[in-house]
Image 1 (tube, rainbow, N blue to C red):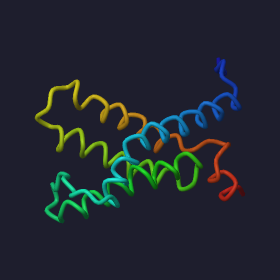
Image 2: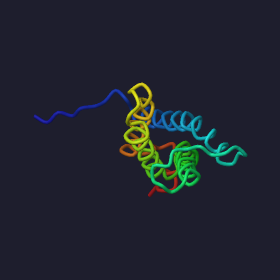
Image 3: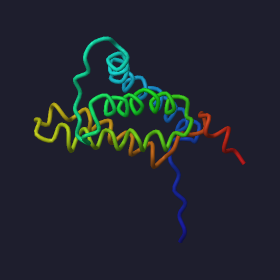
Length: 137
């Protein structure tokens, strides 16, 4: 006997949920990225981790790109999976390298962001995104 399973969530609800998730996670990440953007272009001396040995300014620039530009891309749903992958990498690096020795409570936020970005990479942006309109067949 072949059974068909249905979900209580209809497709529009999923798409609205993805829209909400994208905008919310982007806004939350921007709260971390904008102060770094100000630090990058501000007059104060830059004091930032340099795990790659490319210099504090270059490292800060890469993080600002991820946390500000990629967050805006996710909010608008443009190149969503690529932007989420860049942020996924950034959060994985923050969790496993930058905060490796810190207690779990300190690095937990990076892990939460990491999980959300993994979800977005897997699921995509949903119907209410610029990706949907540009990639529509």
